[in-house]
Image (cartoon, rainbow, N blue to C red):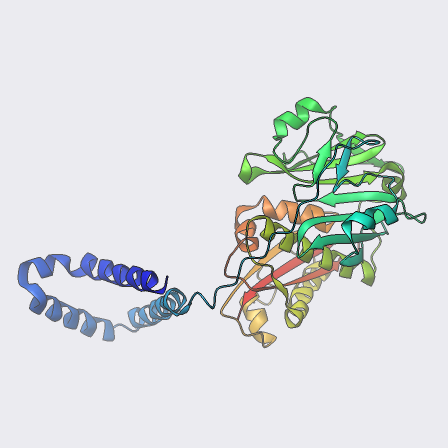
Length: 376
């Protein structure tokens, strides 16, 4: 593998030189090429702007060559061992099940076959999303009521079964032709909250549950995730955004972190580590946007994400940032980011090693999300 990378680098360098000096070589050989290079070098020395540009390009080439030549097979991250997928069965009481779990099931039954939870964090419904997975494989989340019965489910992995044939291979068109008309609004108290028709998701009222089916625009609009919320739990939430609290913002951060890792595993990529020092940088930017009512990678002082990281003494080799706002939860924020090509590229960038998520709520409880990705 290392020899192959070296050959690729040499071919790239040879191609660049041939592009500039190929004609000279054919006419006058190596002597002519040498004279041209010296002449070009003298011109460059006299132009400081060109010199600066060449220095920048040189640094980038060195970084690229280093990545191509210095990584040995021993340095490459080993593939995660595949977790055994559960034997999925058709639901018996509901139209949908996730990991063979249905709304109304007892928590003891869930954990009998799914194992102990990996995390519990507060969600926008005022209850905990309890997360189950095996190193982000066989990932799903469940919420429970006071009687430990399932009131909510979510997964973005192929753990869905249904009585109507809808799976993660189903297209948006087939979902719409199979199910009843999707909801155009959800009533909360005296207000009807309109549901945005952006073709990224549809919400259906099925079995007295609010079933949200998400689609991946970059994979032929096939089903990519599902959220099921019981009617009782949905009606307990009487506003679009949840009431602000420190526990909620922390919960939204953990949920977006987990969802990002889950989708990376779906695409055969490594799991990102939680970057504790970088969390402050992400939170500070979300807070700045929430308090000053703007939405941009460049803050009001003109600082870029990389400037903010440097100011917080965060050293990095490569970095990236995703922003989201307006969504009521980390689930909707994550699914929206995956349908935005630039944000999707950050989430699925192979080179990134760690992630920090910062969330802040505005005075009207609207969440602002910042994801900072990094490689040291």
